[in-house]
Every structure is written in C-alpha cells, then in structure tokens.
Amino acid sequence: MTKVYNQGRNEVYALRGADIDVYPGQMTVLVGPSGCGKTTLLSIIAGILALTDGECIVMGNDFSKMSDRQKTSFRRKNIGFVFQQYNLLPALTAAENAAVPLIVAGESRLKAVAAGHHRLGQINMQHRADSLPTRLSGGEQQRVAIARALIHEPRLIVCDEPTSALDAKTGRATMELLRTAAVQADRAVVVVTHDPRVLPFADRIVTLEDGQVTGEQDPPEHHDHDHHTPH
Image 1 (cartoon, rainbow, N blue to C red):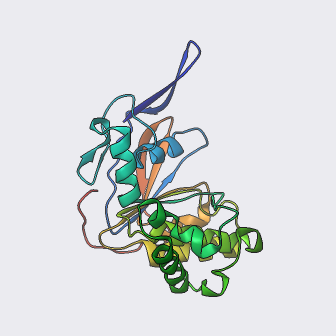
Image 2: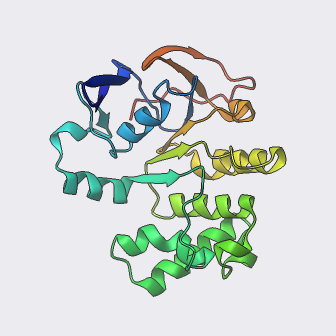
C-alpha cells in the first residue's frame, strides 16, 4: 500500500509499500515513531482514506474498486471505530451515543437506544446510560465509545490511540475491556498506539517506520490463539 500526499510542489510519502495482513480473532497493534504512517494505514484499512497505489482488501472487498457510497455503506455495516478523543456527541446521553451506528443504519431510535442501554449494561455502564458525556469521566466516555463501536457487531474494529488520554489504571481497564468484549473469533481488532501499556494485550505487534512495515514482535505476555485466515 502506498499513500502520497501532495503539499504544493512536494510529494510526501505517508506509506511506502506497506504490506500487512490482519487476522480475525486477534488484536493487531501497530507501533512506530510519530509520522511513520500508522494512522494513515489505519484510515486506509477502515476505508476512510483512498490509496495512491496498491490494494487494500478487507473481508474480500477491494476498496479501490468501490465508490464512496459503497465504502460508506460497507463501513456502517462492518467497521467499528474507537478514537483517542472519544468523539461522543455532547447533546446525546451515553445510551444514545452508543446507539448512533444503529440509528445511522436505519434502525428506529427506540430500538437503537434500547440496544445502547443493553450494550452499556454488558460493560457495567448501565448506571451511566442516561448521563451526558460532560458528566462522564474520560474512562467512562471511552467505555461508551467502545460500546458504540461494538453495537452493530462489526467484523473489524479500528482503534486510534484509545488509551493516550487516560491515566494508567483507566487505560489498562480500557484495554481489558477491548480484549474481552471486542476480540472474537470472527472479528479483527487493529490498534494504533504509542502507549507501551497496550502491548501486553496484543496478539501481534507490527512495527512501522518511514511508511513501511519493518517487522513483527511478540507481545510481552502473548495470548495464544488458533491459526486464522486473513481479513
């Protein structure tokens, strides 16, 4: 995969032929220095950014051959997002925020919010379901964001620096939740991080440097999984 940004007369290579397979049933963590292309790679995998060259096949679908409308529809059904800054809507309660992917997909608001309550209950957040984001701690907001990412049962979850705004204890709790709630046999989880506390939760740690995949390392505490086929 290659991604080039044009800045005036200058071409900036964000990715230089990066090659990666992501497997269901695993948490793949992307690490590397700032500016190495981690977030760009995550955005391409999620169908948000278009490649300059190469291909990105997700669940048998080649993004380069899909229209913007097709990619949007695919993302709504198949991809969940967890962001560094949570991206919760301030006027909506926790349950309503969790329900947003279902509402966008055309589910009735009543059913969607009921599902939001149910999903929050599964992660011990039912008591905060009717709270607005401003009334929630950072860790609670991130748990709502994880509930939102999971609510439509996506087959791929992408997480961009999910712990960097959290203290050590809350960050660890967030990763434990992602590990237990998000990683399933038919779902892949990809995490971009600078946070070394994330690494023990990984199945695979992939290193990027200067827009290229330069290696793979074992996690500090490896989670054993069966062999999987690529997503």
